[in-house]
Length: 255
Image 1: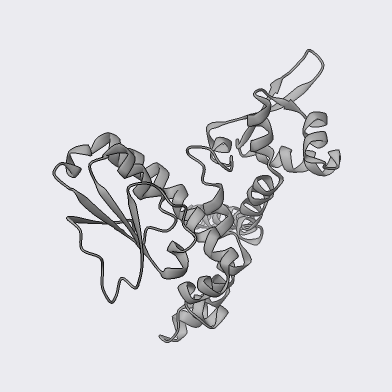
Image 2: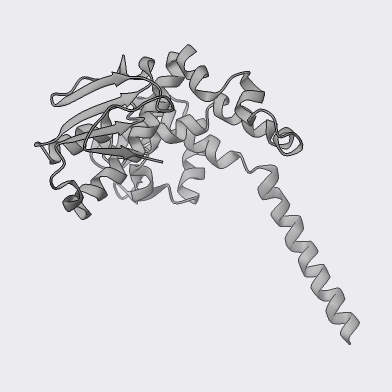
């Protein structure tokens, strides 16, 4: 009897493994389809429209072939990234969900740029060097893949540098808003604040706006601050945080 139970349990585990292994075979598909949705601008189109859009409306707006777009939408609906809602008695539209609102390029809680960064060929390539990193304590996976560290690579590739800044701004808009709303007393008495690794200044501009008595210093690598949008009340300083950091009453870091 005991042997039968053991064999039965092993068979159940094997059956589950047969199914589960396919999640690893096609593990890349979900992020690829979400990236596709961002690049096509599906969430942006529905948001701009202001109500659910039919397949016909979306294909016209996005200039896509209906069968191809429908397959993408079916996948996204299955994972509850979008949802279907009746538009008329005879037609179904595709509507936003809290998750797909994070895919709107310029939404307040957008994570689109962060997804585009992490799903880019540049950032995916190091994952293919992960085993080399485990076997060798030398270069990081990014250096193995690209021959230089991420910051040197970004300096030589402005498009990638911009994508990094936009991705970090996604995180900043969420985290800094929570900080302002929940921990505002932290900034009492602080007249100057340096944001170390401030990127395009999104975090600091939010803080200076919320606490206008503060003078902000956006500190990052020279090639980053050179293209950062200029905001009143913020000074822009280029340099290396491992060498020195501008003086201020307090320093702000986002990990």
